[in-house]
Length: 319
Image 1 (cartoon, helix red, strand yellow):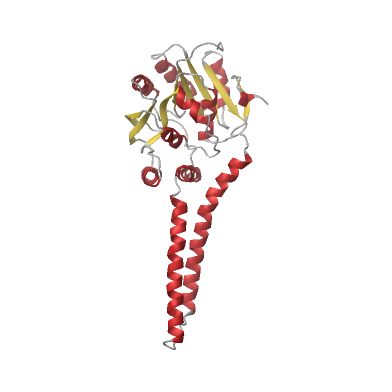
Image 2 (image 1 turned 180 degrees about the vertical axis):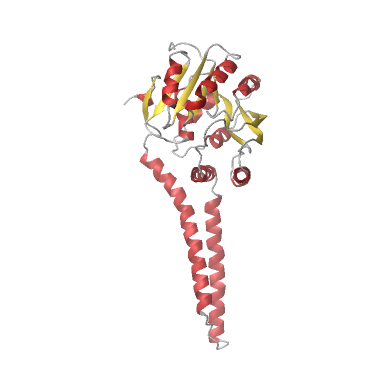
């Protein structure tokens, strides 16, 4: 692609073990992006796939000059993969879409049309989540509502990263250096004119999700610690509460010993209360530790990702 060619729309697609559907994914993306403009780019970010995803992407670059790929040196995670695409894209409007075809590419023209009405962010809101377990639906529903309640940013519920954003949003996202990315929170934090369209999320067409329960928990912690101080306030309030309870118990014990002349005994109650307070302390230390861990990662200032190879000339791809 010529360096001075104007790009109307960029599409960022993180890829992790999706070799079986890459051809279908490409065809559906191309057919729908062409409804918008001939000047487009599809940026596939291979996030350390263990299958033949990279080989399939390289084949596509040989038949379509609008296809770009970024291959990570290892698996860095979904949010980092999207961030790499944001660092490399040059379109006036940018679509973020997952590579598993659960987010239908056929929605892209509708997102773009809404964007042209003057909205800097148009996100796809899920009215239905097909093919997902009952447990995942319940936990996701609970997470988004807790996040909305405790954060100071109005993060839309029932949404993923599937959306279209204006180039100005991309430029601001590039200025956010935090290591623990939570892009939907960052985009909401930026403000500007935002709206949504409704859609039914499709079943996964091939393979298993790369989001294990542990990864989902880490992602949830990134969202909460990145946009809320409520856990720290909870720890402080808990400490004050138990300090008050302890003061009352001490006062009563002294009163009982010196006034009532009756010493309070009870090995069982002592052990139970000690273990309970110890558990509360460990939970509190753990919550504080999550915040400190994120501070430490930002202080280390390591690169967010390492590019193994790419057909895009970017600063991040240079050794």
